[in-house]
Length: 445
Ligand code: SF4
Image (cartoon, rainbow, N blue to C red):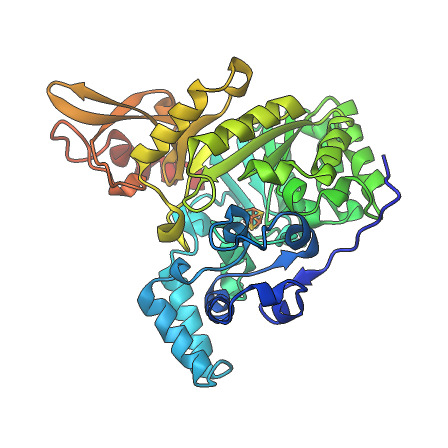
């Protein structure tokens, strides 16, 4: 389906944001704050987002403004002040400024869960660049050309991918060793092509990642997942871009080759799906036989209310999208600004879930993608007189961990797995004993 309208993307960064038609709606103070924070965290927004999603008359509380525009409190006071002081004294282009920026970035845990090294497998004694193999059946591929997005989410846990610190980038190399790795690892069933946003790549490049997987040597791969936020940030990708028809034909080809093509849509707020373009894009993708599933972290200032999730999940079911995950904001970058206590996340999840029909109850969560695996917060119970949080692995570095409940002391403030302490006088969680063995097994795969 190709619409007659052909919108052209215009990207705004910290260097040209003053040319945004709505720029004067941002107060002078906020403009300065944006400049300071955007020196540390990557900032990019496009004209689709600014024209269709942001509510310019309600910037202070607009969730979609918070989704894309930096706020002062996304940095700690000391980080903010060190950069602000250099900018306001005209030292924004000095070696001291760049040293300060780099130091702060490194203090923000740029690669949570040790991703840069601990999930990278070896092949022929060499690390396979741009690949993470954390769970037995699923491999993540980070295409070199897909390490950017049409707009950047302020909460992004992959923000380091977009920073200009070269050694923080994670992407495939030109030798494409990941294909050999996937071919030889018959235990794999799922390949997740991720980024950035792989749908930023043109159809010709996207094909070089997807088409090989349709060949007979890859018959063990049953699902190709594409993680993307294009439904929210550039739905024209499936309506009117120059290579839209090629992209849709590629999806059809993958489905015809008996693969499940799972489009993993990042949708943080129902408003992202309420535009005509998003509706058309969803229909176009579904018309290829691809399945759309949705996921999002739960985020203060954006979606930390049950009513937002209810409306989002209901709308998704109406559009034929399968709600998949509610994640917890990860321990990196501006986590302090967005994270809410795990107990509050559980409350929001449960309240939303009980108010939607069975078909919308497919979303799992709240779940932490932590170093040992995906840990779900299941419940709060009193056991042997102790109030505890019940947790469970949905995915584990060791598959034996999956599904087994384990217990943490009740902590109403905890926001991440590492904030929790084992219940019942245990010194450590059971997986902490086993993780070194598993790590060494994985690095020798
Ligand atoms: S679309 Fe995904 S990868 Fe891109 S900035 Fe947003 S969360 Fe990060």
